[in-house]
Image (cartoon, rainbow, N blue to C red; front, top):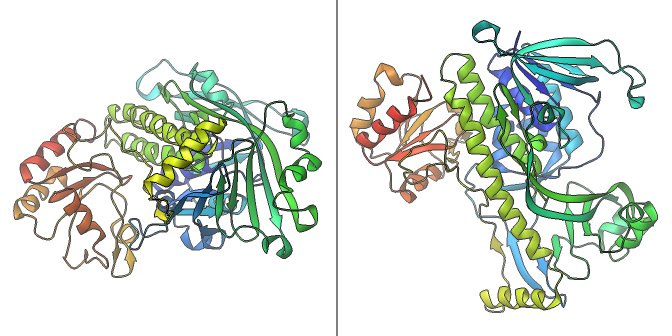
Length: 517
């Protein structure tokens, strides 16, 4: 009997397997494919996700495959600059550049190598799920039975070897948009009202081509064909091109059709097509993210347009949220009620972020000429007619419900920052468990409360003490901005609640006891 079975070994499944394996949990993971997909799909990630890779010990190994995201310029109907987004100033709130681009195939190989080093994780590539059956029994008989089969040498013809069964206490479907796990437990998808055909093109550009291309990423907000140009790593460039009514998605995805659309920027002798594919950009979310002992994560649970580069990031957030909760429950450190908060927290977060992504899509993709001109005029009026780079604001919504302070104290549900502590990243010193961060002038009453045996699993960090001396006062500024003396932070770095007095903190700790034993 495994603790957790994971169906799907893409980025979401691999991150989940790694985080569970680092906790010593017995994990079984499968994927129908035997190798990493060699063409890029996701290209963007953010500092929250890099913090997860830090937790997995992968920063050094991943460094060659990640670069800061460039500025983004938006051009309007008449080719004029209407908006420019830039990176926030130092110090960065998580120690990383907030927005980055990366090479997905290389990333996935590094991630899988890490999972393979974990002795409690069994990886089964070339293995396909045929079905699953949750047990109705309780106690030691509870769990889920998966029926799987190894793909044989003719896997591309759908032929498979002998069936066998795997049993696990919990199952997580990370098996993509057409998830068999989701179908097996009868979870439907909700349509969030976005459906557009686009062509996505990845090109490896030679020096001649690079010399003529824009030096920043560009949003072409043109009604005749809304388009996006993205600078990825090294000589990799991506175009996302809206497919017009009457155009054949299959034809535009041929090399001939693709080069015709790229002719505005590039000629065939100036680069090599790496991937070109037509898609319908969807906005979909599962009606719920779990059913009994079966959970969904990644594209199995939600799909969103790519306008903010959050597709893979959302799956990693699912994995992080679920991993610490499964770990706590399986180790007897939390009640089953904690697992119910996974769907509560993640679904609401996904829906709100998808709404914001749709807003960007509508800004870029306005097809009505008059409305597009109104958009341009409004944006130019907001900046007094002079477009200056504006730092990208954090687009991530806060968690609003779940394992959080019910009083919704300031900062509840947001990500707590990671500071440099004497040139060492905070998480490398303090780990990723429950913690309370106290301001330098916090009352001694907080410390007296936290030394009680009931709270021995919570680490206490008081700013200014020998092991909590900040290089840039990132945490001190955060506490001051939220007018609090203490922040109670969860293992996934989200703020459970903040307090100005030890009485407030005590109330939060007591409420936390509904979930954490």
